[in-house]
Image (cartoon, rainbow, N blue to C red; front, side, top):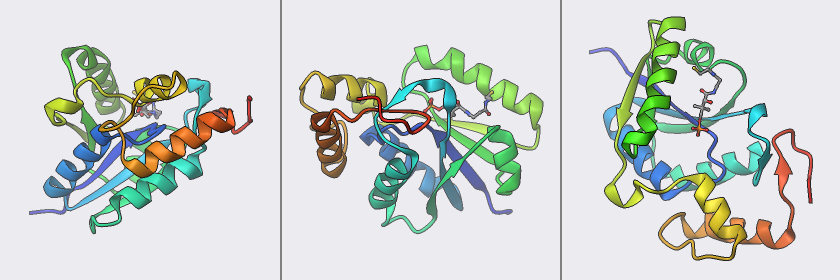
Length: 174
Ligand code: PNS
């Protein structure tokens, strides 16, 4: 059987327990899993820089030998070809995710038929979890236990306390 290299793309601002659940599942299924942070200029204000997001992901996945962390620019399918990847891994939490994920998977397949999208479900307790909701709860002083790893919670709290939200272009807004 040929080696399956999969890319797990996302914003990871910040990495959540739901992302980590999917990374663990993916690392068991694929020969190699590249977690790829998208440099997405459309998303506006972000909490962490690309380097910080990468740092947290590296720390949280260091025990998984077949997982590595990278940052990519431009089209996901071009990055897949560059990395010799044959699959894209995406998580589907609820039916509301499906429409957007279907559109993205089909568009990616139209642009690059050699790359298949594989959907996996995170554990049920993470089905309502997203980075956006983590950022919002943190900004409003709510509890983050069980949503992100302790190290990430500390970094989020520290960042909110500093009031240093940065834009996607890396500019500090506050
Ligand atoms: O964590 P997110 O924000 O849901 O991830 C979305 C992401 C990064 C996977 C998506 O925006 C993406 O693939 N961006 C790269 C640019 C691209 O290829 N766009 C065309 C998608 S059809």
